[in-house]
Image (cartoon, rainbow, N blue to C red; front, side, top):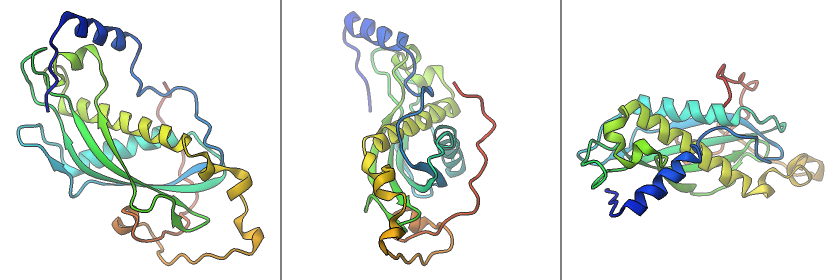
Length: 224
């Protein structure tokens, strides 16, 4: 994957966008209604990478995304638990390229499932796929392979992935509407949950999951 910058005008535009700030930063909380994060499961054991790119371990990928999902979503305390199951399908951590002329960009492909704990079901059968690019900054324009370590590239992708997921959840308010989902059992609805803990199959959307233990404390990380 290559990004070709063919004119000084394109460079000027990139510089302007970079000056506007990194969209992965935490801003004000979105309107996610009843949302409160329960399980946060990231699975990268089958993630494919592109030959020639930098390589990250399964543990590094899972840790980076898990941390950023926690940082962004533990802020919400809507009172109804939802679990996120994230499958990392593939990634490219850009190697050094020819600055400006051919600057590869880092990219990651994820499939995200959202489980409603009270209903015991996946709200997105089959999951929602995301293609996540690294942020457009002055460093990325000349090639993040020159200006960032592999760990920094991975962090950048993890932050952007969490931001895209947050926007997607906000775009689906019916999932978190108190009036619709707060007390489903009042109408005599019954649900069966037959898995006592989350598994790779559950994260992939092929099994139901049960209510987790008490909500974990928010990670001790400063907000932005």
